[in-house]
Image (cartoon, rainbow, N blue to C red; front, top):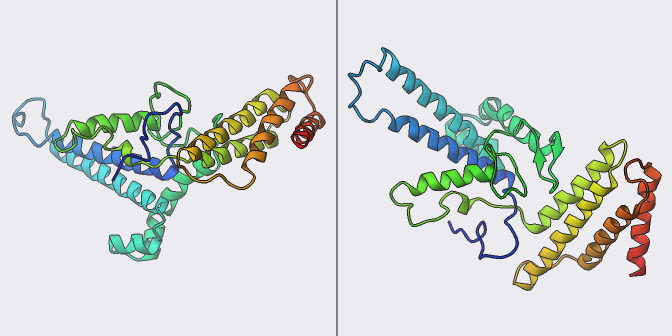
Length: 281
């Protein structure tokens, strides 16, 4: 698998966040590492006679391996569902019926998707922010040094871990290199969703924050333009009109009076002003 999609040639634009399917694969890889590390700890026999080894320790460690293997199986099913596999295909792989596979794993898949689809809040770039997103798969946008629990840090640590093992030393990104990231147009859609949700959720609208979102949308669309000029995907119909509209909307929102205590009619007036400015241009 090539690394070109996740790690393009150096450019002023940072990589976009991982997709939900990439997060599911990342957690599966992380569980595989836990299985390997746990097994490696007891392959050697040097300490078998040590007084630090209590009766039953080997059984307990074998039970831990079983627990980790079962966790890997659940995460493999989640990843297969993210990849589009049907319950029938998953059941066939496990040697059980479609219904049995659904009964055994559907709740785990639901628990995985719910905080991604309906998060408690959204990050400024529109990615989900929810404490129910598993540790190690959380989004931390705009962070130069990814925080503990973030997907970027998990991917970086897994890259380092795998490079230490034979056969991977010549690859800089043996894990993160194959994980898909959101496209720029997908990020634009996430930002638009964040702006819509903010207007629906807030009793007192924060025009400055909403203006930031529309400016971010315009920044992303300018990135799309750069990517298109470098041989990327063609621009969608109405692209330039959308870019101008988002800039105008941000400008009008910033110009609205009483930003700290505004009514909904002022928000609507700001959006109307944005539409009028767009038409004038």
